[in-house]
Image (cartoon, rainbow, N blue to C red):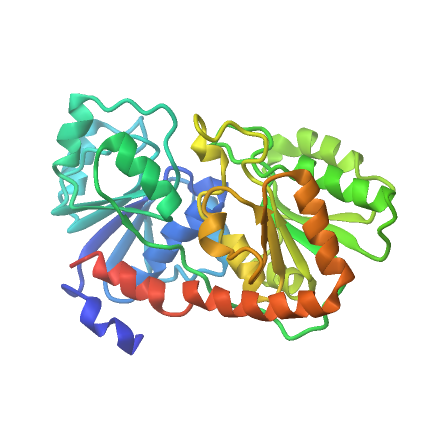
Length: 367
């Protein structure tokens, strides 16, 4: 038990239920929600509502999250589950924590906590939703970017709990590698190239065509079976270039990639109408912080939660155009002094999001 948590535990042995409607997507939101489950299971009886055990079992391999003390129960939030039965089941819990997809579940636990992982596009708030909010004890978001839209659109006040960042960088020699980490698609966002991996590939190919030598681009992607055909089309356009794909790698392997890479790219939101679709930008940027903790210098789009992480010109660069992405990247490639300086500052910045902060703040939600 972490001694720093003692002051944050309201009641021991509470029954806590956790629901994430996208658990099989294995993205940042799932890491976030299952980290909450793991954290609270230190002192409470935690249950995750989900029907497929194989999805649950993948959590440790992908994220190295210990769920050994967490119970798995049938998904009472499934549309197939009778409402009355769900109502009775939720009364057995002291607290239910749910990731919202825009809807607010009607539950009868003693307390209800709602988490928003992203802005919700074109949400319409009816009287029924307003009444459901009356039963909600706390609402929390993963970034101030998400908070700004949720507060405005739902006309509520939320708090921010930044995602958990566990630093597992390895002390190994870095290579001339640019890295990107992200799912090939995000089904809950509804954008075919949400992470803009095609865009980054085109930029890197252009840099190679213009004379860049001795550098490679690695894309570590999470890939679902149904997306393989589209992925293979993207993969085919990289033939003949020093571009590699690492698919569905375990957490340990991802940290090896972070550790050998010198530069980190992220482009979610590029070319999108973020005024009308703010969900297309990165909502926070867990992989950006993880990369920084391993000394990768981030060169990321000036949009979404990335702006809360990277201090432009200090511990990385933020860009608005693809020309800026190329120029800033080449500036780092051509100056080992600048690269080393920013690498050290990136490591320092990552510490602001790491350590026991997340656990302490999660337990404080129960107060």
